[in-house]
Amino acid sequence: MDMWRGLRHDPPMTRTTPDMITELADDEVFVFGSNASGAHGGGAALIAHRMFGAEMGVGEGLTGRTYALPTMEGAGAFQAAAERFITFARENPDLTFLLTKVGCGIAGYAEDEVRPWFADTPPNVVKPAGW
Image (cartoon, rainbow, N blue to C red; front, side, top):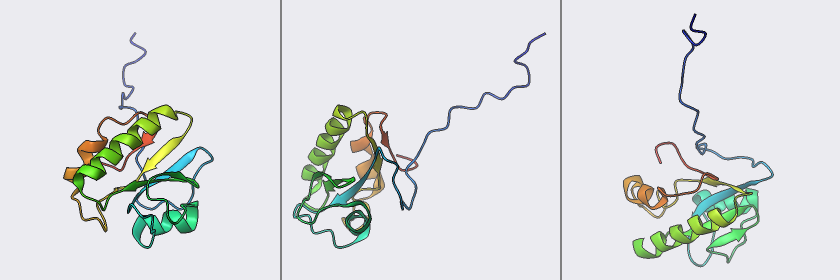
């Protein structure tokens, strides 16, 4: 008798970044789009500042429980910052990075333009659904 008959073989669940992040686990980092000057005045940047310790004046990198990605200085600069972020995530496997839809709000990029820049993230980067 086949003991596996009738069991469902669903693919493993893939975790995605929630649309609204209101709290972080101890090892989690909120990844958001910023401007190079670190003026976190709106969108996810304001949430990062108010809720998770993103420092004003820091436009890229780890600060508080956040990682800022400059998205407002042109596509080339944004893509280079995405590559630096991916390297940082690889070098910090003990942290879990909750990537928001960076660049797709105030910065005005389409998801289809930005998504490929994050295709090669390590497993400790949780991406938005469809990314």
